[in-house]
Length: 256
Image (cartoon, rainbow, N blue to C red; front, top):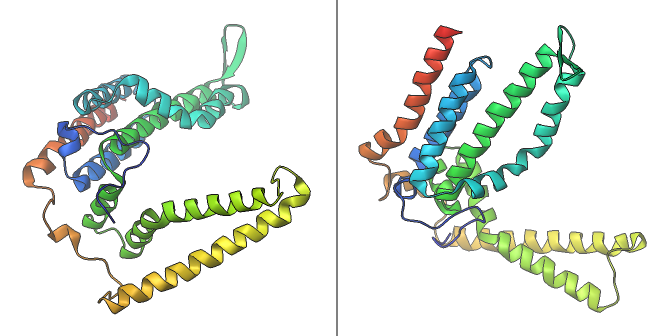
């Protein structure tokens, strides 16, 4: 797994957030998200504080708001569902601009919008400042189950190979008169998928045998013991965001 593997969300930079060890960033993001979800939905001011924390990290990471919000559109289906809740909810109702809306539905919509958006933005900041390889290394250092990190590692390593092979197979079909737009040619598409699966399986078997012949024992190296692991200073720096969020949540619980 080479160091050059980067995903489409990664933004090359030398910011302090980019330089943090991946395991510290992953832990901070997860803790921040858990704290946001655990905050009472009626503590409206608390979500404003969380948004300021996200904005501060984005500025420190040199990730612009336009980039963040354009990628955050992935949550659009949940936004549409949230907008429907005030109309579909039951219980006490209130008149807003001539519309009869459910109070519980309004609270539920706000809960989904606020917490979902903050969670998506936090995840995007993690992805924008951490390469795919570092994400896997960070999960490994956090003692994520080996089977998960191994699957992710091999998927990362060979995904481009499989995509390229699928593209070549499609070009070969089209050059022989196949047009996948027609429903009656679905059989050819299914045969291609089956052939791709067999090729991937055979390649996986060859790779596994080659790894075993070179001393592979079924476990990845203990990368958390190697160079580049988070220092105490990096853990402290990464902990500032979840600690600030925890303080806001504690005050919100007391005041609610």
